[in-house]
Image (cartoon, rainbow, N blue to C red; front, side, top):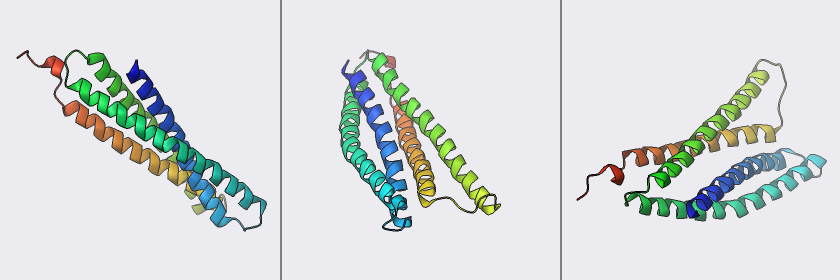
Length: 167
């Protein structure tokens, strides 16, 4: 049951961290772009504060639980008979890869569409926080995909003790 807890908390905290980092980028861009005494600046500062709190709370929780899950998985992978646990680990990795690729497609598509609208004069401009959120989401999605894909490749190349003949 511990592995369900570890992977569940890791997944939820990774999602919270992803959202908080995206909001952090938008809030920071809004603070920089908005006039200091404006309502937009106050709203951007409030967004920035909330996003910062989300990052401060979720990053350590994700890191601690993810490291713990990886350590447990390393221990399981050396012992035969843990095929369900290995499958659960791979399911988590493939799920994160798929979701991050979907998020990259969406965030990248929205950002490219904004750029095309500006280039084609269909719209004069977009607020800086819109650009920052879109770019941050695309970069984070690509980084998540690359990190977890690397872990998948490592897991796929590792020998499976269940398939090894007894010694």
